[in-house]
Length: 212
Image (cartoon, rainbow, N blue to C red; front, side, top):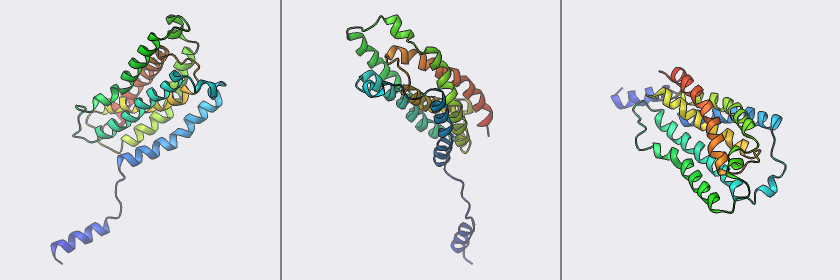
């Protein structure tokens, strides 16, 4: 048997192939998502005035911000799942929600205020926000960490923090359909604090779970 034929035979015998990190991450998030949706449906549900709220651009803005956090976080976390990968050149993607919020806050400031700034900042649902987003994030965080574990990140704590951004962004997207506080100031403040509450947990777990 010549060398080429031997290589082909060995390749044919090796039917088992390690699944790609992206495929595992997608499946893990799809498995975890129903649990987060169940938490949402059981304890929260969609806001009663959702149909009229859709005509408010700041209501729509919330979904743009949360998805612009989750989707880039998925992209960057998959990039960092390789052992040689660095954050350099990719981190700007994580600034997209910051830019969107800055534009939205500027737009709201230029409009005639419907309520004082302090009321827009504090809102009516800050406590619910701080509980709901972390609660719905945890199943998704477990799925994201499981998916990223199939890679070999050189910075496990950073990969864990990115897993948090993925899960918190998706959970915040769910919560945005419930939250009646549509001000960008509220979103920038309380959604960020809720995400930060889970970020520390994700970084600690990532340092352990994603170490190889």
